[in-house]
Image: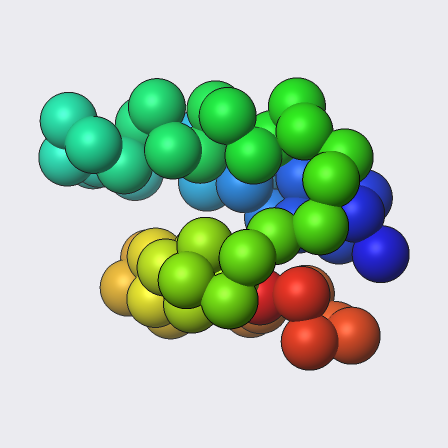
Length: 62
């Protein structure tokens, strides 16, 4: 399941969407961390994905 949140974060980083100063480091951190996301992290990732028109990964990780 970890690969799903990593791929989702990487897709935002490589899509070229305008990110706020705190969003970039957050996405970079989880893109290279295979550990499960906390509920707060998963929620924020989901919000960012929706904001930029991407789907959240399946499996409840985001």
